[in-house]
Amino acid sequence: MPAARLVLPHGRRRRTRLWRVFRAAYRDTVALWNEFRWPILAFLLLLFGGGWLYGELMALAGYPRVPYQHLLYYILEMMVLQPPPVEDVPTELYLILFWYIVPVLAILIVGRGAAEFVNLFFNRSERRNAWEEAVASTYRNHIIILGVGHVGLRVARALVSMGFDVVAIDQELKPDAEDELAALGVPIIKTDGRNPQSLDLAGLRYAQAFVACTSSDQTNLEVIMRARDLNPEIRIVARMWDDTYAKQMKNFMGVDAVHSASDLAAPVFAGAAVGVEITQTLQIAGVEYSMIRLQVEPGSFLDGGTIGSLQEANDMDIVLHGSSSAVEVQPSSNIAVRGGDTLVLFARHDRVINIVERNQKTKNR
Image: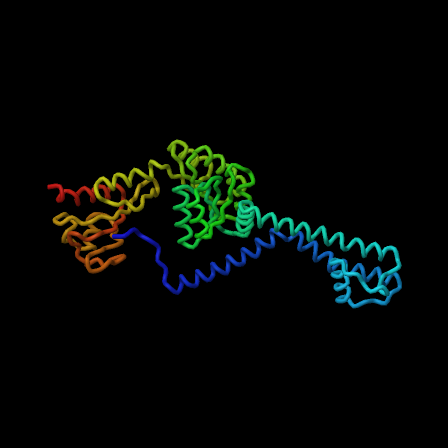
């Protein structure tokens, strides 16, 4: 049976894709505005504010009032150093000064905007970093991932497939990981996660969750402390190698979920040793539960029973039944299970171990 994946109805997938395209275009526009807003605002202020001021100065000098739209044209002429007709040149000192000051201000404003544009255009690395940060600043109710190595990249991939917005933080990325994140539409904040500004750049104050996925327990711990301080309500999930660290973080730092590598890997290795895929493990009220996928061995206690009778006798829930002819999710209780069929079942971990052992006994005889 192939690995599980999330499947959406075709129509919904298309609407989601169109919505993401629209949302990306909106964010790009906002990011562009964030990058060049000060030169643009200064230019508009000089144009409209300068037009009004020039009209008032002309009225003060005794000239007839000029329509406002014409004043805007006068200001534009001054900005581009367009000389006026000789008869229109004012004689008052303050009007003459105005004619000289406007072009200088225009050159300063346009020059600053042009310099920023040239810097972003020719400095590829800085341009991309600045743009990614600008796009990330538009995100709301998103999920931040610290560390996008093997684990973090898979977390990002899964979250994006489920329709969540993701922002990644990592100081050094492999080219293939960076390319995949770009294809997923995940902006990357390229900085040390311990940098106080990194979480602000990723929009931590507006995020719904923070996932610490670096391979360093100390780094994860340090950044989690800062994240909790900046956003006391955010949900925090951490990857930890040291079990002691994991327990302390969950008990004393308000971390919602802490997973150590050994805890996550042990059930997978154990299942692989006996030919069983453990797809999920979790703990509820101190009791461990597992979801597994196994193949029914011919002649085992599962062979010949019905879905309903097997569930009731073994205190488990069979959530999927696959045979050579069909695959059913939440199968009917009267369906008969045969050797070679595939079952996905959920039960207490001790019950799962017992079921696997009894299913294997016939095989090993």
